[in-house]
Length: 73
Image (cartoon, helix red, strand yellow):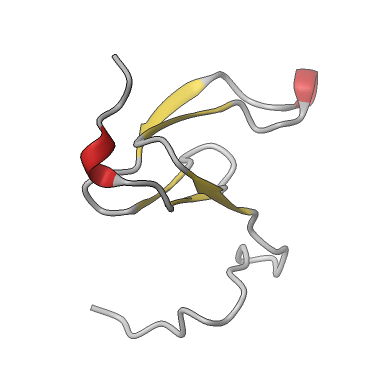
């Protein structure tokens, strides 16, 4: 496993900052945020890891909610 400085801003290989989004839901939608220039809508599961990266755009979702609250279904 690689050691990574978790305090440093996350970037793509090209050096572009990766958007970090704090969420309160264990399941989050991502469409890239670019309208027609985005990507297909995907639903990502943040728990149990506490964070997940979108496989299309690299947005990094971090869970900041109450994991015992359920997911609202």
